[in-house]
Image 1 (spheres, helix red, strand yellow):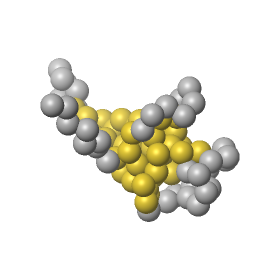
Image 2 (cartoon, one colour; image 1 turned 90 degrees about the vertical axis):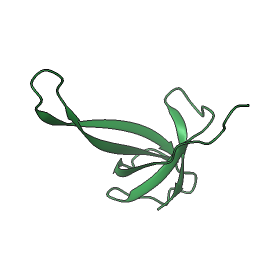
Image 3 (cartoon, helix red, strand yellow; image 1 turned 45 degrees about the vertical axis):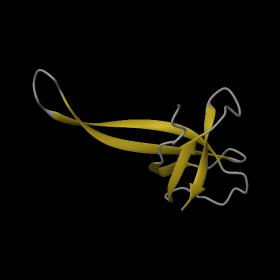
Length: 79
C-alpha cells in the first residue's frame, strides 16, 4: 500500500507580482559537514494562489500537487 500523505510546508511570500502565483521562500539552518559552521539556506517555491489573496510578507502553508506549469507544482492551503 502506498501512503498518499503530503507534507505541508510553511514559508513567507517574497513575491506576488505574477497572476495567480506567489513565490514562497523557506529558510533553513544547515551545518557544514567539515567545518561545522552553521549557515542559512533559502529555497523558493512557486505556489498557485487562484484568487490572488496573498501579498508580500504573508506567511502561508502550501502542499505539493500535480504540475500546473513548468515550475509550479504547489498549491496554497491557508494563511
